Image 1 (cartoon, rainbow, N blue to C red):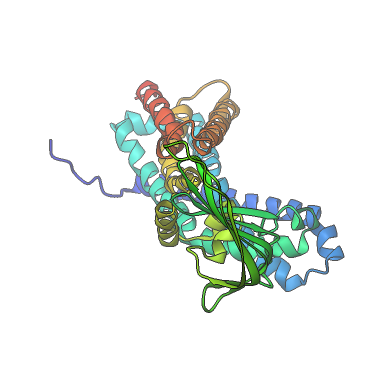
Image 2: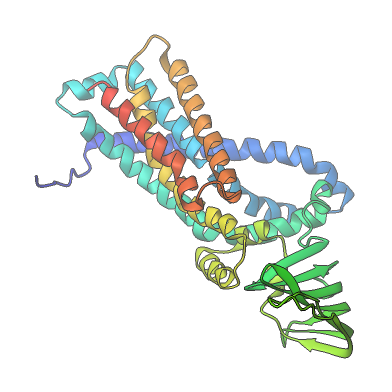
Length: 375
């Protein structure tokens, strides 16, 4: 069967205009409400911490808006589709379209064209815009928002990172401003036991050379029993002038859940490759972030199909019934997606599969509703 491009007719332009117009209005209204409530909530923090007006609007809210648009783009798309489609059904416009010989499948064409525009917009936000916007937003929150100053510190008090197979680095009280840590240790494990350690106090990182230095350090070789049953002695040595380079960048010392949200797609892939080579045990967290950047935009198509299939039938409850059913389904999707992500991060499910499970299940629901929709 030869596929034919349907083109864009007057009816298509009518639906596209309604779809995108409703969506843009919903986004604009949502942004205004969100910013007003957020500003009212944080006004005391802005005053107490003396946040400059220019920083509030240009550094915080300018970068805050893309993140929250993308968080709710699926929900707002869904609500927009249900709102104007149920209104057309109530005004018997859908019946008139189908009665004129237009198939329901052909009727979906302008909806999917509009969904494609929104999906590409969401994809651009996910892959490039939001990662770039997150860095100044997080920096502002750490500096001026009291409730997050302590919670959102870039560095944990105790940092533990894997830098190679069986090799770990431990840092205590690392400061990004001074590039210093009060305690530094490299631990090497062999056959499930701690084999060797290197420990130093008051270490400093040199950004230009990538080397760690300290006035003194100690090394230990731990005792163990070999296959012949012979127990070796512990070897303890003191040294002066630590000057070493390890496979660890200070950007990796930050909270990785925050760090990966500031990376564009290319940098995220490079970072994941680096962490995989080091044998990191946090690959599931990174994979969830990568897959989520694609799964949420794709969900726009699924939610659009569900929205049209639900609201194209004229019922006694009108728009209110359609909105109630639709919003219930949409929040179920969001909740199910959050649970699936936690299962992935906990290692219960493969990350790539877990992130896409909600889309797969709701795609099946969308197809069922499409089949049952009035033709």
